[in-house]
Amino acid sequence: ELVKKLSADAYANHIKNVFTTGNRASQWITINRILGNTRNRKPLIICDDHGNVLNDSKAANFINNHLVKISTAPSNSDHLLNNYNKFKTVKANCKSIFIQPVELSQVLKLLSETKTNKAIGHDGIPGIVIKRLSPLLAEPLTELINLIITKGKYPTELKKANVTLVPKPGFSGNINDLRPISVLPELNKIVEK
Image 1 (cartoon, helix red, strand yellow):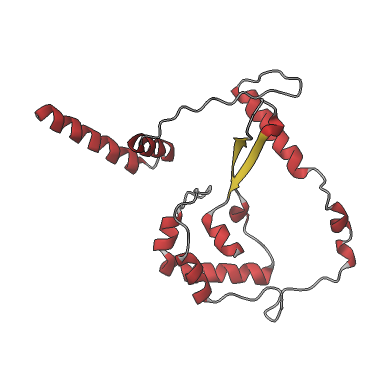
Image 2 (tube, rainbow, N blue to C red):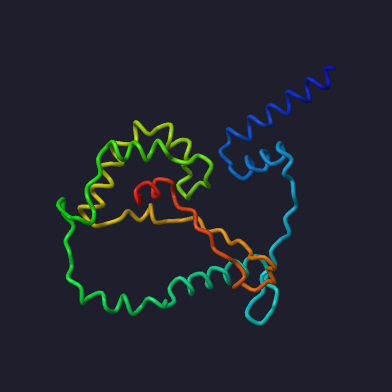
């Protein structure tokens, strides 16, 4: 009986320590163990253009270079960008029919509707925190959104994303079989709405 109690106390302390350290990876490992989701994932084997298997650091560099190349490659919509200068530039102002300043009530509504089951962006702020703090965040976020509209400049921090590569079904080691999934900060999603 004493051994069971000590064991339970040790396990409870372990759980408490995991969730107070702020290490999300170990938190998710613990949650998955509690829920019984301990499936073993196969490691990804990445090959270069010649079919050679790459070690971890070479694979990371190869993937990074590939993502940079495809993100800056010309797209099929380049003809639209080339014709952009033909259109008259419209200055952003409060009377614009395109983008109107937002009101506090609109931002508060969006903040309170934040989904709490979504992945966390690079800022580390989970949706549940934004939702619970919505009354405190609404005013400064309203001011930020209206500044973005009037100045026409978007904060760089809101543009940053965590990119996770998800293999397509039947992944063969070819880098083109990896799909990049971007997770933006939750506040960016609210600003965009």
